[in-house]
Image 1 (cartoon, rainbow over the protein chains, first blue to last red):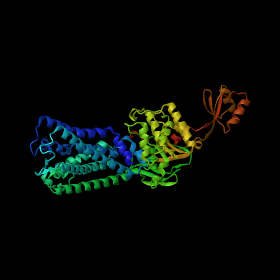
Image 2 (image 1 turned 90 degrees about the horizontal axis):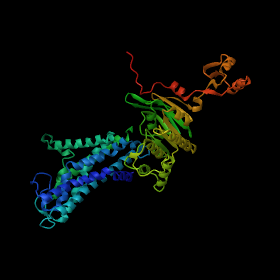
Image 3 (image 1 turned 120 degrees about the vertical axis):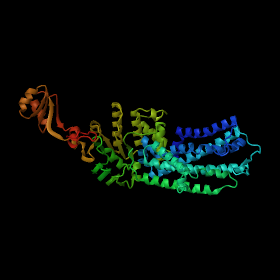
Image 4 (image 1 turned 60 degrees about the vertical axis):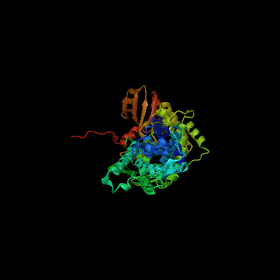
Length: 271
Length: 303
Protein backbone atom coordinates (compact mmCIF):
# COMPACT_ATOMS: atom_id res chain seq x y z
CA UNK A 1 0.00 0.00 0.00
CA UNK A 2 2.90 2.34 0.76
CA UNK A 3 4.27 1.80 -2.74
CA UNK A 4 0.81 2.41 -4.17
CA UNK A 5 0.55 5.71 -2.34
CA UNK A 6 4.03 6.77 -3.44
CA UNK A 7 3.18 5.89 -7.02
CA UNK A 8 -0.05 7.88 -6.83
CA UNK A 9 1.86 10.85 -5.46
CA UNK A 10 4.52 10.59 -8.14
CA UNK A 11 1.96 10.27 -10.95
CA UNK A 12 0.07 13.33 -9.91
CA UNK A 13 1.06 16.33 -11.97
CA UNK A 14 0.23 18.58 -9.03
CA UNK A 15 3.11 17.10 -7.01
CA UNK A 16 5.66 18.13 -9.59
CA UNK A 17 4.11 21.51 -10.25
CA UNK A 18 4.15 22.44 -6.57
CA UNK A 19 7.74 21.29 -6.07
CA UNK A 20 8.70 23.14 -9.25
CA UNK A 21 7.09 26.35 -8.06
CA UNK A 22 8.78 26.00 -4.69
CA UNK A 23 12.14 25.88 -6.47
CA UNK A 24 11.25 28.58 -8.94
CA UNK A 25 10.56 31.27 -6.38
CA UNK A 26 14.05 31.29 -4.76
CA UNK A 27 15.55 31.00 -8.25
CA UNK A 28 13.69 34.14 -9.29
CA UNK A 29 15.01 35.90 -6.21
CA UNK A 30 18.55 34.76 -7.07
CA UNK A 31 18.21 36.12 -10.60
CA UNK A 32 17.04 39.49 -9.30
CA UNK A 33 19.83 39.62 -6.72
CA UNK A 34 22.44 38.69 -9.30
CA UNK A 35 21.31 41.32 -11.78
CA UNK A 36 20.65 44.20 -9.39
CA UNK A 37 23.12 43.41 -6.58
CA UNK A 38 20.77 45.18 -4.23
CA UNK A 39 20.66 43.27 -0.94
CA UNK A 40 18.19 43.70 1.84
CA UNK A 41 19.24 45.69 4.88
CA UNK A 42 20.43 43.53 7.73
CA UNK A 43 17.48 42.37 9.85
CA UNK A 44 14.92 42.92 7.10
CA UNK A 45 13.36 40.46 4.70
CA UNK A 46 14.07 36.75 4.71
CA UNK A 47 17.20 35.63 6.51
CA UNK A 48 20.53 35.32 4.66
CA UNK A 49 19.47 37.46 1.71
CA UNK A 50 22.19 40.01 2.37
CA UNK A 51 24.75 37.32 3.12
CA UNK A 52 24.26 35.52 -0.19
CA UNK A 53 25.47 38.54 -2.12
CA UNK A 54 28.86 37.83 -0.62
CA UNK A 55 28.70 34.08 -0.91
CA UNK A 56 26.33 32.17 -3.17
CA UNK A 57 26.93 28.84 -1.49
CA UNK A 58 24.78 30.06 1.38
CA UNK A 59 21.85 30.50 -0.98
CA UNK A 60 20.18 27.19 -0.08
CA UNK A 61 19.64 28.62 3.40
CA UNK A 62 18.22 31.80 1.91
CA UNK A 63 15.96 29.71 -0.34
CA UNK A 64 14.60 27.86 2.69
CA UNK A 65 14.00 31.18 4.43
CA UNK A 66 12.06 32.41 1.40
CA UNK A 67 9.69 29.45 1.08
CA UNK A 68 9.31 28.59 4.76
CA UNK A 69 6.80 31.18 6.00
CA UNK A 70 4.07 30.50 3.46
CA UNK A 71 4.78 28.54 0.31
CA UNK A 72 6.20 25.38 1.82
CA UNK A 73 3.46 25.00 4.48
CA UNK A 74 0.78 25.64 1.86
CA UNK A 75 2.20 22.96 -0.45
CA UNK A 76 2.41 20.51 2.45
CA UNK A 77 -1.10 21.38 3.66
CA UNK A 78 -2.44 20.74 0.15
CA UNK A 79 -0.93 17.25 0.01
CA UNK A 80 -1.87 16.46 3.62
CA UNK A 81 -5.40 17.79 3.28
CA UNK A 82 -5.92 15.82 0.09
CA UNK A 83 -4.72 12.53 1.56
CA UNK A 84 -7.98 11.06 2.86
CA UNK A 85 -10.53 13.70 1.87
CA UNK A 86 -9.24 13.61 -1.71
CA UNK A 87 -9.92 9.87 -1.90
CA UNK A 88 -13.35 10.47 -0.41
CA UNK A 89 -14.25 13.19 -2.88
CA UNK A 90 -13.34 11.14 -5.97
CA UNK A 91 -15.19 8.18 -4.43
CA UNK A 92 -12.13 5.96 -4.20
CA UNK A 93 -12.13 5.77 -0.42
CA UNK A 94 -15.00 3.27 -0.41
CA UNK A 95 -13.26 1.06 -2.94
CA UNK A 96 -9.97 1.17 -1.06
CA UNK A 97 -11.59 0.32 2.28
CA UNK A 98 -13.63 -2.47 0.65
CA UNK A 99 -10.64 -3.86 -1.23
CA UNK A 100 -9.77 -4.30 1.71
CA UNK A 101 -7.05 -1.90 2.68
CA UNK A 102 -7.00 -1.77 6.49
CA UNK A 103 -7.88 1.71 7.66
CA UNK A 104 -4.75 1.93 9.81
CA UNK A 105 -2.66 0.71 6.90
CA UNK A 106 -4.19 3.30 4.62
CA UNK A 107 -3.42 6.05 7.11
CA UNK A 108 0.17 4.87 7.55
CA UNK A 109 0.65 4.77 3.78
CA UNK A 110 -0.75 8.28 3.49
CA UNK A 111 1.63 9.46 6.21
CA UNK A 112 4.62 7.87 4.50
CA UNK A 113 3.68 9.46 1.18
CA UNK A 114 3.22 12.81 2.91
CA UNK A 115 6.62 12.48 4.58
CA UNK A 116 8.19 11.60 1.26
CA UNK A 117 6.64 14.68 -0.29
CA UNK A 118 7.84 16.93 2.55
CA UNK A 119 11.40 15.62 2.37
CA UNK A 120 11.45 15.76 -1.43
CA UNK A 121 10.14 19.33 -1.44
CA UNK A 122 12.63 20.59 1.14
CA UNK A 123 15.53 18.78 -0.47
CA UNK A 124 14.52 20.07 -3.90
CA UNK A 125 14.51 23.63 -2.60
CA UNK A 126 17.96 23.16 -1.02
CA UNK A 127 19.51 21.51 -4.08
CA UNK A 128 18.05 23.96 -6.56
CA UNK A 129 19.02 26.78 -4.20
CA UNK A 130 22.59 25.57 -4.15
CA UNK A 131 22.73 25.28 -7.92
CA UNK A 132 21.35 28.74 -8.66
CA UNK A 133 23.43 30.22 -5.81
CA UNK A 134 26.67 28.85 -7.13
CA UNK A 135 25.84 29.64 -10.76
CA UNK A 136 24.43 33.13 -10.37
CA UNK A 137 26.00 34.59 -7.25
CA UNK A 138 29.67 35.14 -6.35
CA UNK A 139 31.20 32.39 -4.26
CA UNK A 140 32.94 34.89 -2.00
CA UNK A 141 36.45 36.20 -1.65
CA UNK A 142 37.60 33.65 0.88
CA UNK A 143 36.82 30.66 -1.29
CA UNK A 144 34.47 28.42 0.63
CA UNK A 145 34.50 30.39 3.84
CA UNK A 146 31.15 31.79 4.98
CA UNK A 147 30.51 34.14 7.84
CA UNK A 148 28.07 32.68 10.34
CA UNK A 149 25.13 34.63 11.67
CA UNK A 150 26.95 35.37 14.90
CA UNK A 151 30.33 36.30 13.43
CA UNK A 152 32.97 33.55 13.21
CA UNK A 153 33.59 32.02 9.83
CA UNK A 154 32.36 28.58 8.78
CA UNK A 155 34.13 26.32 6.34
CA UNK A 156 32.37 25.00 3.28
CA UNK A 157 32.07 21.55 4.84
CA UNK A 158 30.51 23.00 7.96
CA UNK A 159 28.01 24.97 5.92
CA UNK A 160 27.00 21.85 3.98
CA UNK A 161 26.54 19.90 7.18
CA UNK A 162 24.49 22.64 8.76
CA UNK A 163 22.30 23.04 5.71
CA UNK A 164 21.58 19.33 5.93
CA UNK A 165 20.67 19.69 9.61
CA UNK A 166 18.44 22.68 8.83
CA UNK A 167 16.80 20.67 6.05
CA UNK A 168 15.95 17.91 8.50
CA UNK A 169 14.63 20.38 11.05
CA UNK A 170 12.39 22.12 8.53
CA UNK A 171 11.17 18.80 7.18
CA UNK A 172 10.02 17.82 10.68
CA UNK A 173 8.37 21.22 11.16
CA UNK A 174 6.50 20.73 7.88
CA UNK A 175 5.49 17.22 8.90
CA UNK A 176 3.81 18.87 11.89
CA UNK A 177 1.71 20.94 9.47
CA UNK A 178 1.13 17.87 7.34
CA UNK A 179 -0.28 15.79 10.18
CA UNK A 180 -2.65 18.59 11.18
CA UNK A 181 -3.88 18.60 7.57
CA UNK A 182 -4.02 14.79 7.57
CA UNK A 183 -6.18 14.79 10.69
CA UNK A 184 -8.57 17.38 9.23
CA UNK A 185 -8.60 15.31 6.06
CA UNK A 186 -10.13 12.41 7.98
CA UNK A 187 -12.75 14.72 9.49
CA UNK A 188 -14.12 16.28 6.31
CA UNK A 189 -14.78 14.93 2.82
CA UNK A 190 -13.53 18.14 1.28
CA UNK A 191 -9.80 18.24 0.55
CA UNK A 192 -9.96 21.99 0.19
CA UNK A 193 -11.58 22.33 3.59
CA UNK A 194 -8.88 20.24 5.25
CA UNK A 195 -6.10 22.21 3.55
CA UNK A 196 -7.56 25.58 4.44
CA UNK A 197 -8.19 24.37 7.99
CA UNK A 198 -4.53 23.49 8.42
CA UNK A 199 -3.44 26.81 6.95
CA UNK A 200 -5.88 28.64 9.22
CA UNK A 201 -4.32 26.83 12.19
CA UNK A 202 -0.89 28.08 11.11
CA UNK A 203 -2.04 31.65 10.58
CA UNK A 204 -3.65 31.61 14.02
CA UNK A 205 -0.47 30.21 15.50
CA UNK A 206 1.61 32.94 13.85
CA UNK A 207 -0.79 35.55 15.20
CA UNK A 208 -0.38 34.26 18.75
CA UNK A 209 3.38 34.04 18.39
CA UNK A 210 3.42 37.74 17.58
CA UNK A 211 0.98 38.62 20.35
CA UNK A 212 2.64 39.51 23.63
CA UNK A 213 -0.54 38.80 25.58
CA UNK A 214 -0.29 35.19 24.42
CA UNK A 215 3.17 34.67 25.88
CA UNK A 216 1.89 31.98 28.25
CA UNK A 217 0.90 29.63 25.41
CA UNK A 218 3.58 30.76 22.99
CA UNK A 219 6.05 27.92 23.67
CA UNK A 220 3.42 25.37 22.69
CA UNK A 221 2.42 26.86 19.35
CA UNK A 222 3.34 24.86 16.24
CA UNK A 223 5.07 27.77 14.51
CA UNK A 224 6.88 29.12 17.58
CA UNK A 225 10.21 27.45 16.81
CA UNK A 226 9.94 27.33 13.03
CA UNK A 227 12.76 29.83 12.60
CA UNK A 228 15.03 28.04 15.07
CA UNK A 229 16.81 26.36 12.14
CA UNK A 230 18.66 29.66 11.64
CA UNK A 231 20.46 28.80 14.88
CA UNK A 232 22.26 26.04 12.99
CA UNK A 233 24.18 28.85 11.27
CA UNK A 234 25.41 30.37 14.49
CA UNK A 235 28.85 29.61 15.84
CA UNK A 236 28.58 27.79 18.14
CA UNK A 237 25.17 26.30 17.27
CA UNK A 238 22.46 27.52 19.63
CA UNK A 239 20.74 24.25 20.52
CA UNK A 240 18.12 25.45 23.00
CA UNK A 241 15.34 26.50 20.57
CA UNK A 242 16.21 23.74 18.11
CA UNK A 243 15.70 21.10 20.76
CA UNK A 244 12.43 22.62 21.89
CA UNK A 245 11.26 22.95 18.30
CA UNK A 246 12.00 19.28 17.62
CA UNK A 247 10.15 18.30 20.79
CA UNK A 248 7.09 20.41 19.98
CA UNK A 249 6.87 19.14 16.40
CA UNK A 250 7.23 15.54 17.54
CA UNK A 251 4.35 16.08 19.98
CA UNK A 252 2.18 17.68 17.27
CA UNK A 253 2.89 14.86 14.85
CA UNK A 254 2.11 12.20 17.47
CA UNK A 255 -1.05 13.88 18.76
CA UNK A 256 -2.62 14.65 15.39
CA UNK A 257 -1.67 11.27 14.01
CA UNK A 258 -3.37 9.69 17.01
CA UNK A 259 -6.45 11.83 16.49
CA UNK A 260 -6.51 11.01 12.78
CA UNK A 261 -6.33 7.31 13.53
CA UNK A 262 -8.96 7.44 16.27
CA UNK A 263 -11.31 9.32 13.98
CA UNK A 264 -10.74 7.35 10.81
CA UNK A 265 -10.73 3.84 12.31
CA UNK A 266 -14.37 4.11 13.40
CA UNK A 267 -15.66 6.47 10.75
CA UNK A 268 -18.56 5.64 8.45
CA UNK A 269 -17.44 5.92 4.84
CA UNK A 270 -20.47 7.49 3.20
CA UNK A 271 -18.93 9.00 0.08
CA UNK B 1 -23.72 -16.31 1.54
CA UNK B 2 -25.13 -13.26 3.34
CA UNK B 3 -27.18 -13.42 6.54
CA UNK B 4 -28.13 -10.40 8.59
CA UNK B 5 -30.07 -10.34 11.80
CA UNK B 6 -31.77 -7.32 13.33
CA UNK B 7 -29.48 -5.07 11.31
CA UNK B 8 -30.15 -1.42 12.13
CA UNK B 9 -28.40 1.83 11.27
CA UNK B 10 -29.42 5.16 12.74
CA UNK B 11 -28.07 8.57 11.81
CA UNK B 12 -29.26 10.69 14.69
CA UNK B 13 -33.04 10.50 14.60
CA UNK B 14 -33.14 9.06 11.11
CA UNK B 15 -33.30 5.29 10.88
CA UNK B 16 -31.74 4.45 7.53
CA UNK B 17 -31.89 0.67 7.93
CA UNK B 18 -34.38 -0.82 10.36
CA UNK B 19 -34.20 -4.35 11.77
CA UNK B 20 -33.28 -6.04 8.50
CA UNK B 21 -32.98 -9.81 8.29
CA UNK B 22 -31.55 -10.33 4.82
CA UNK B 23 -30.76 -13.81 3.61
CA UNK B 24 -28.98 -14.26 0.30
CA UNK B 25 -28.63 -17.94 -0.65
CA UNK B 26 -25.38 -19.32 -2.07
CA UNK B 27 -25.21 -19.10 -5.83
CA UNK B 28 -28.32 -16.98 -6.18
CA UNK B 29 -28.79 -13.79 -8.16
CA UNK B 30 -30.39 -11.61 -5.53
CA UNK B 31 -32.04 -8.36 -6.53
CA UNK B 32 -32.52 -5.69 -3.90
CA UNK B 33 -35.36 -3.44 -4.96
CA UNK B 34 -36.76 -0.36 -3.36
CA UNK B 35 -37.49 3.28 -3.96
CA UNK B 36 -34.73 5.89 -3.62
CA UNK B 37 -33.78 6.45 -0.01
CA UNK B 38 -35.19 3.13 1.17
CA UNK B 39 -31.87 2.08 2.70
CA UNK B 40 -30.46 -0.16 -0.06
CA UNK B 41 -27.14 1.62 -0.26
CA UNK B 42 -26.68 1.92 3.51
CA UNK B 43 -27.38 -1.80 3.82
CA UNK B 44 -24.78 -2.57 1.14
CA UNK B 45 -22.28 -0.26 2.81
CA UNK B 46 -22.72 -2.11 6.08
CA UNK B 47 -22.13 -5.45 4.37
CA UNK B 48 -18.84 -4.13 3.02
CA UNK B 49 -17.68 -2.66 6.32
CA UNK B 50 -17.82 0.91 5.06
CA UNK B 51 -20.52 1.92 7.50
CA UNK B 52 -20.79 0.46 10.99
CA UNK B 53 -24.17 -0.83 12.11
CA UNK B 54 -25.88 0.68 15.13
CA UNK B 55 -27.03 -2.79 16.13
CA UNK B 56 -27.57 -6.23 14.66
CA UNK B 57 -25.34 -8.87 13.16
CA UNK B 58 -23.97 -9.64 9.71
CA UNK B 59 -22.52 -12.90 8.49
CA UNK B 60 -20.75 -12.81 5.16
CA UNK B 61 -19.38 -16.01 3.61
CA UNK B 62 -19.89 -17.68 6.96
CA UNK B 63 -17.88 -15.17 8.97
CA UNK B 64 -19.02 -12.39 11.26
CA UNK B 65 -18.67 -8.89 9.84
CA UNK B 66 -17.22 -6.37 10.54
CA UNK B 67 -15.06 -8.37 12.99
CA UNK B 68 -13.49 -10.58 10.33
CA UNK B 69 -13.86 -8.27 7.35
CA UNK B 70 -10.22 -8.69 6.49
CA UNK B 71 -10.70 -12.39 5.72
CA UNK B 72 -14.01 -11.88 3.91
CA UNK B 73 -13.48 -8.88 1.68
CA UNK B 74 -10.78 -10.39 -0.56
CA UNK B 75 -13.52 -12.72 -1.83
CA UNK B 76 -16.00 -9.90 -2.42
CA UNK B 77 -16.17 -7.62 -5.43
CA UNK B 78 -18.15 -4.42 -5.14
CA UNK B 79 -19.56 -1.56 -7.13
CA UNK B 80 -21.14 0.90 -4.71
CA UNK B 81 -22.96 4.07 -5.72
CA UNK B 82 -21.34 4.38 -9.07
CA UNK B 83 -17.81 3.69 -10.24
CA UNK B 84 -14.86 5.78 -9.10
CA UNK B 85 -11.38 6.23 -10.51
CA UNK B 86 -8.49 8.65 -10.52
CA UNK B 87 -9.35 10.92 -13.43
CA UNK B 88 -5.80 11.70 -14.47
CA UNK B 89 -4.79 8.05 -14.86
CA UNK B 90 -5.79 5.54 -17.52
CA UNK B 91 -8.31 2.80 -16.75
CA UNK B 92 -5.57 0.20 -16.78
CA UNK B 93 -3.39 2.21 -14.38
CA UNK B 94 -6.39 2.65 -12.10
CA UNK B 95 -7.03 -1.09 -11.97
CA UNK B 96 -3.36 -1.82 -11.38
CA UNK B 97 -3.24 0.59 -8.43
CA UNK B 98 -6.46 -0.77 -6.98
CA UNK B 99 -5.22 -4.31 -7.34
CA UNK B 100 -1.87 -3.45 -5.75
CA UNK B 101 -3.68 -1.80 -2.83
CA UNK B 102 -5.21 -5.12 -1.80
CA UNK B 103 -2.22 -7.38 -1.14
CA UNK B 104 -2.50 -9.34 -4.35
CA UNK B 105 0.15 -11.20 -6.25
CA UNK B 106 2.29 -8.90 -8.34
CA UNK B 107 3.26 -11.64 -10.78
CA UNK B 108 -0.26 -12.15 -12.11
CA UNK B 109 -1.43 -8.55 -11.83
CA UNK B 110 -1.06 -7.60 -15.46
CA UNK B 111 -2.90 -10.70 -16.60
CA UNK B 112 -5.72 -10.21 -14.13
CA UNK B 113 -6.15 -6.55 -15.07
CA UNK B 114 -6.20 -7.43 -18.77
CA UNK B 115 -8.71 -10.22 -18.18
CA UNK B 116 -11.01 -8.00 -16.13
CA UNK B 117 -10.92 -5.29 -18.81
CA UNK B 118 -11.58 -7.90 -21.47
CA UNK B 119 -14.60 -9.29 -19.66
CA UNK B 120 -16.35 -5.93 -19.43
CA UNK B 121 -15.59 -5.08 -23.05
CA UNK B 122 -12.75 -2.65 -22.45
CA UNK B 123 -10.00 -4.99 -23.65
CA UNK B 124 -8.83 -2.64 -26.37
CA UNK B 125 -8.78 0.47 -24.20
CA UNK B 126 -5.98 2.94 -24.88
CA UNK B 127 -4.01 5.15 -22.51
CA UNK B 128 -6.39 8.05 -22.38
CA UNK B 129 -7.17 9.21 -18.83
CA UNK B 130 -10.41 8.13 -17.17
CA UNK B 131 -11.41 11.79 -17.14
CA UNK B 132 -12.10 11.40 -20.87
CA UNK B 133 -14.25 8.25 -20.46
CA UNK B 134 -17.96 8.25 -21.16
CA UNK B 135 -20.38 7.33 -18.38
CA UNK B 136 -20.79 3.85 -19.83
CA UNK B 137 -17.04 3.29 -20.02
CA UNK B 138 -16.65 4.35 -16.40
CA UNK B 139 -19.40 1.94 -15.44
CA UNK B 140 -17.61 -0.87 -17.25
CA UNK B 141 -14.35 0.07 -15.55
CA UNK B 142 -16.10 -0.07 -12.18
CA UNK B 143 -17.37 -3.56 -13.01
CA UNK B 144 -13.89 -4.61 -14.07
CA UNK B 145 -12.57 -3.44 -10.70
CA UNK B 146 -15.23 -5.51 -8.95
CA UNK B 147 -14.31 -8.59 -11.02
CA UNK B 148 -10.55 -8.24 -10.53
CA UNK B 149 -10.09 -11.04 -8.06
CA UNK B 150 -12.69 -13.58 -9.22
CA UNK B 151 -14.90 -12.86 -6.20
CA UNK B 152 -17.22 -15.43 -4.60
CA UNK B 153 -19.69 -12.66 -3.90
CA UNK B 154 -20.36 -9.73 -6.16
CA UNK B 155 -22.19 -6.75 -4.68
CA UNK B 156 -23.37 -4.34 -7.33
CA UNK B 157 -25.27 -1.11 -6.81
CA UNK B 158 -27.08 -0.09 -10.01
CA UNK B 159 -24.71 -2.06 -12.28
CA UNK B 160 -26.16 -0.93 -15.59
CA UNK B 161 -26.36 2.76 -14.79
CA UNK B 162 -25.32 4.89 -17.75
CA UNK B 163 -25.21 2.01 -20.24
CA UNK B 164 -27.10 1.92 -23.51
CA UNK B 165 -29.52 -0.97 -24.20
CA UNK B 166 -26.81 -2.99 -25.90
CA UNK B 167 -24.46 -2.41 -23.00
CA UNK B 168 -27.16 -3.39 -20.53
CA UNK B 169 -27.74 -6.64 -22.38
CA UNK B 170 -24.02 -7.32 -22.56
CA UNK B 171 -23.49 -6.70 -18.84
CA UNK B 172 -26.52 -8.82 -17.97
CA UNK B 173 -25.06 -11.70 -19.96
CA UNK B 174 -21.71 -11.18 -18.25
CA UNK B 175 -23.33 -11.27 -14.81
CA UNK B 176 -25.21 -14.46 -15.68
CA UNK B 177 -21.96 -15.99 -16.83
CA UNK B 178 -20.14 -14.98 -13.65
CA UNK B 179 -23.03 -16.36 -11.62
CA UNK B 180 -23.02 -19.63 -13.54
CA UNK B 181 -19.35 -19.99 -12.63
CA UNK B 182 -20.32 -19.95 -8.96
CA UNK B 183 -20.35 -16.31 -7.91
CA UNK B 184 -23.31 -15.16 -5.86
CA UNK B 185 -24.74 -11.83 -7.00
CA UNK B 186 -26.35 -9.14 -4.89
CA UNK B 187 -27.67 -6.45 -7.20
CA UNK B 188 -29.46 -3.37 -5.99
CA UNK B 189 -31.60 -1.45 -8.41
CA UNK B 190 -34.72 0.57 -8.70
CA UNK B 191 -35.25 -0.69 -12.23
CA UNK B 192 -37.84 -3.45 -11.96
CA UNK B 193 -37.32 -4.79 -15.44
CA UNK B 194 -33.62 -5.06 -14.75
CA UNK B 195 -34.13 -7.19 -11.66
CA UNK B 196 -36.92 -9.19 -13.25
CA UNK B 197 -34.68 -10.21 -16.13
CA UNK B 198 -31.56 -10.97 -14.13
CA UNK B 199 -32.46 -12.14 -10.67
CA UNK B 200 -33.67 -15.38 -9.14
CA UNK B 201 -34.35 -13.89 -5.71
CA UNK B 202 -35.81 -10.53 -4.81
CA UNK B 203 -35.75 -8.46 -1.64
CA UNK B 204 -37.90 -5.35 -1.42
CA UNK B 205 -36.91 -2.49 0.84
CA UNK B 206 -39.09 0.37 1.98
CA UNK B 207 -38.31 3.05 4.54
CA UNK B 208 -35.33 1.12 5.84
CA UNK B 209 -37.18 -2.16 6.30
CA UNK B 210 -36.92 -5.28 4.22
CA UNK B 211 -40.61 -5.74 3.53
CA UNK B 212 -40.46 -8.83 1.30
CA UNK B 213 -37.85 -11.38 0.42
CA UNK B 214 -38.53 -14.39 -1.70
CA UNK B 215 -37.77 -16.23 -4.88
CA UNK B 216 -38.83 -14.31 -7.94
CA UNK B 217 -40.98 -17.21 -9.11
CA UNK B 218 -42.86 -17.21 -5.80
CA UNK B 219 -43.39 -13.47 -5.81
CA UNK B 220 -44.69 -13.63 -9.33
CA UNK B 221 -47.33 -16.14 -8.31
CA UNK B 222 -50.22 -17.10 -10.56
CA UNK B 223 -53.26 -14.93 -10.12
CA UNK B 224 -55.68 -17.73 -10.96
CA UNK B 225 -56.65 -16.05 -14.20
CA UNK B 226 -55.84 -16.86 -17.78
CA UNK B 227 -55.25 -14.10 -20.28
CA UNK B 228 -56.13 -14.86 -23.86
CA UNK B 229 -56.48 -13.12 -27.17
CA UNK B 230 -59.00 -14.25 -29.69
CA UNK B 231 -60.63 -12.95 -32.86
CA UNK B 232 -63.90 -14.56 -31.66
CA UNK B 233 -64.10 -12.56 -28.47
CA UNK B 234 -67.88 -12.19 -28.42
CA UNK B 235 -68.49 -15.91 -28.76
CA UNK B 236 -65.89 -16.69 -26.09
CA UNK B 237 -67.60 -14.29 -23.68
CA UNK B 238 -70.91 -15.94 -24.43
CA UNK B 239 -69.48 -19.42 -23.96
CA UNK B 240 -67.63 -18.75 -20.72
CA UNK B 241 -70.51 -16.68 -19.37
CA UNK B 242 -69.58 -14.88 -16.16
CA UNK B 243 -66.04 -16.17 -15.89
CA UNK B 244 -64.64 -13.42 -18.09
CA UNK B 245 -63.54 -10.82 -15.58
CA UNK B 246 -62.15 -8.28 -17.93
CA UNK B 247 -62.38 -7.51 -21.61
CA UNK B 248 -60.38 -5.06 -23.70
CA UNK B 249 -61.11 -5.54 -27.41
CA UNK B 250 -59.94 -9.02 -28.32
CA UNK B 251 -58.09 -9.49 -25.05
CA UNK B 252 -59.87 -11.33 -22.27
CA UNK B 253 -59.00 -12.15 -18.67
CA UNK B 254 -60.73 -15.32 -17.62
CA UNK B 255 -60.96 -16.76 -14.10
CA UNK B 256 -59.76 -20.29 -14.68
CA UNK B 257 -57.23 -22.45 -12.82
CA UNK B 258 -56.00 -24.53 -15.74
CA UNK B 259 -54.85 -22.74 -18.90
CA UNK B 260 -54.38 -25.94 -20.90
CA UNK B 261 -57.89 -27.19 -20.12
CA UNK B 262 -59.38 -23.82 -21.02
CA UNK B 263 -57.53 -23.84 -24.31
CA UNK B 264 -58.74 -27.32 -25.14
CA UNK B 265 -62.29 -26.33 -24.25
CA UNK B 266 -62.26 -23.26 -26.52
CA UNK B 267 -60.66 -25.05 -29.43
CA UNK B 268 -63.11 -27.91 -28.97
CA UNK B 269 -65.92 -25.39 -29.43
CA UNK B 270 -64.31 -24.24 -32.66
CA UNK B 271 -63.11 -20.92 -31.27
CA UNK B 272 -59.83 -19.53 -32.53
CA UNK B 273 -57.17 -18.51 -29.98
CA UNK B 274 -54.19 -16.34 -30.91
CA UNK B 275 -52.57 -16.14 -27.49
CA UNK B 276 -53.23 -17.81 -24.21
CA UNK B 277 -51.23 -17.85 -20.96
CA UNK B 278 -51.80 -18.08 -17.24
CA UNK B 279 -51.63 -14.61 -15.72
CA UNK B 280 -48.82 -13.83 -13.28
CA UNK B 281 -48.45 -10.89 -11.00
CA UNK B 282 -45.91 -8.47 -12.38
CA UNK B 283 -42.99 -7.52 -10.20
CA UNK B 284 -44.30 -3.99 -10.34
CA UNK B 285 -47.55 -5.03 -8.71
CA UNK B 286 -45.63 -6.90 -6.02
CA UNK B 287 -43.36 -3.93 -5.32
CA UNK B 288 -46.14 -1.38 -5.31
CA UNK B 289 -48.16 -3.55 -2.96
CA UNK B 290 -45.19 -3.86 -0.61
CA UNK B 291 -43.95 -0.27 -0.58
CA UNK B 292 -45.22 3.24 -0.03
CA UNK B 293 -44.08 6.40 -1.75
CA UNK B 294 -40.31 6.89 -2.17
CA UNK B 295 -38.36 8.91 0.36
CA UNK B 296 -37.71 11.56 -2.27
CA UNK B 297 -41.43 12.11 -2.57
CA UNK B 298 -42.43 14.76 -0.09
CA UNK B 299 -46.13 15.39 0.08
CA UNK B 300 -47.52 18.74 1.16
CA UNK B 301 -48.88 18.54 4.65
CA UNK B 302 -52.61 18.94 4.87
CA UNK B 303 -53.77 22.09 6.58
